[in-house]
Amino acid sequence: MKNTNKIEKEPSDIGKQIPRDWVWDDVRTFLAIARSGTLSGAASELNLGIATLSRRIERLETALNLPLFVRFQSGYQLTEDGASLIEKAEAIEAATIVFESNASLQSQLSGRVRLATAENLANHLIIPALPEFQRQYPAITIEFVTDISTANLHRRDADLALRMVRPVRGNVTLRRVGELGYGLYGSAHYVDQRQKLVDSATFDADDFISWGEMQTQLPAAHWLESVLQGREPVLTTTSLASQVAATKAGLGLAVLPHLLGNLYNFVCVEKDIGINQTIYLVMHSDLSHSRRVRAVADFLVELVESNRPILSGNH
Image (tube, rainbow, N blue to C red; front, side):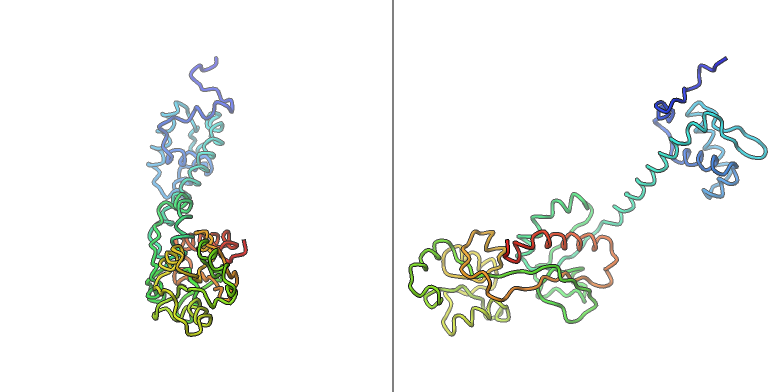
């Protein structure tokens, strides 16, 4: 006579045989005993005591209301019910392994990463793209160090950097990831007025926004010095943000990254003035295997690559 308490073993119903309050350790014990055929073999595999394994398998059988094994002196043999649950138990095992692996990965990809970069790249390229990065790596915090003149990776002032100056010393690794192009820009109003001048092509009658004495080493400052040939600029500043504000106010022409010239809808008077700079991704060598630092580095490389036309001025 058929046992009416027995659960049907149709494949579509197998999932219903696993109780909602199942314990993964019990399922793992079930698989270990099924594979080894003995409690001692399973105990060795799981590094647990035989008494513990016995209690676990009894608990699972009670929860399922099914005998899973026939006990012999020589070992354990699966019942028909137990055999029908192997595939489902292995699916649970595989899902648990994936879950634990992802949880481990997320725990590794957490913490703070200090990034040294130019303020214009931080504000207008990297930060606008951070929401997508944070959705992927919510446990990583990026700390921006925009005063890159004092940030030294060798001293560990930052973990990695996106900069336009190639490091010449220090325990760092670097990679060329793109190019930052520069052009000569003015506001639409200023350019409209200068086009009425006969000698506008020579820059002799133009007003220029230049850099202060502390920034004379900048390529933009050198270019402006060669154009001005002793003439005084209309204004000098010590920050790129001030250069943008002065250009927007129509005070004159300024050498700006194409990234900012296009962002503020300035008019490009000279597209290629010969001072484009290579963008380097620089990383402290000791951190090259850090998963969270690598995650930020990969994000930056992809970001620069996807914005290459805008950064270089070739869009």
